[in-house]
Amino acid sequence: MISTEPFTSAGLIESEDRSPRLVLEANRSHWNHERGPRIERAIFRNDLSPAEALELCISTEGEIDIVTEVSPADAQRVQDSQYAKLVECDANRVLVGIINRSHDDVPLSDKRVRQALNFAVNTQKIIDQGLGSYANPLCGLTPEWCGGFPAGAKPYAHDPQQAKQLLDQVGWPQGRNLRLAAPEAFAGIAQMVADDIQTALGIGVDVISVPLEMQLAGARALAEKKLPLPWDMLISGWFDLSSEAPPAAVHREFFGSDGAFRAGPVLPEFDRLYWEMATQIDGPKLVQVAEQIDKYVFDEALALFLCAPKALYAVNKHVSFGPYRTTFELAETEVDDQHWSRTQKSTRATQTSQAQTPRASGSTSFVSESSGNAC
Image 1 (tube, one colour):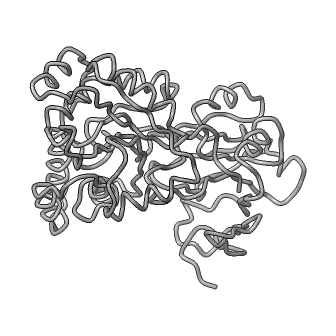
Image 2: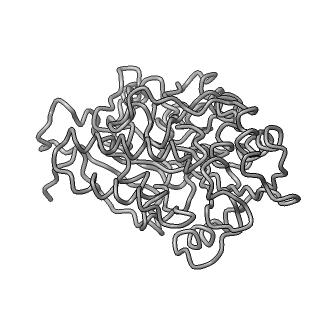
């Protein structure tokens, strides 16, 4: 078998029925020797729960070397470990509130109301208290380290007075609560958002926690856009596998005419800008249009812009692992002479733990209540 990757697979994992373990062997024919591979073998373990994987990494030697998608709630446990260290990365992922512009009985189609929601919510408090400070503010949907980030962009300030003034210009129906939905993993974040909205705007908020078994059906309803949605705003996470043109994978999903997460009428101006970017063959001009798209989305307050959560990893102290902003890579990963695989005189290897790839379900695992799966 010929491979152009740093590792070759000794077995395949089906997406629905995963093998207990997947073994990657070093590809010594890989063209980029400077990059790697620098280990002989990587064993992905799929036979452990997230909690088991993390516990083995932080309390034992020789079982699990890397656990991905560590929850901020578990970060201190990793830092306190004598076996593992916490590695963090500013990743290409966002946490937002999808605003449903399709309901006729609430004025969420009015930009001023959407702006009021953004001014009402203290996103820094959510970052500090909800995510343990392991996140960065958003000035749209493009993190500041990505191409297409508008120069000088700043997030919405927490300004309850301005929020109330904007809402008063439009009004809100008496006795109609705002319906705020969130996957169970984001229920705490949703409650913090609800508290801020109620305090700043003086309107009631019903928090709807969506259990895991109902999330697929809810995601399908949002993507198909055939049935009325039961919520006014949905707390959702999403990610980007490229740093070049974020609107292609992020903005389009939330606001494009074919976007799976668009909740409300088609946005002609967004589609015009997106088409201009998609057909652009000049690199600098493509980035310029990407900046215009992000600025348009932010100026129109098309979402509740919360934060860009960091990716957190628990890593054995004798493993050198440098995370990517986009994907999980092991090519440059290496171990020192004190690593268990060397001190025990066994075959040089590292065992890792990686969470399942998030699906287009409107939620992802990167700010869940527990850390990632083992592999």
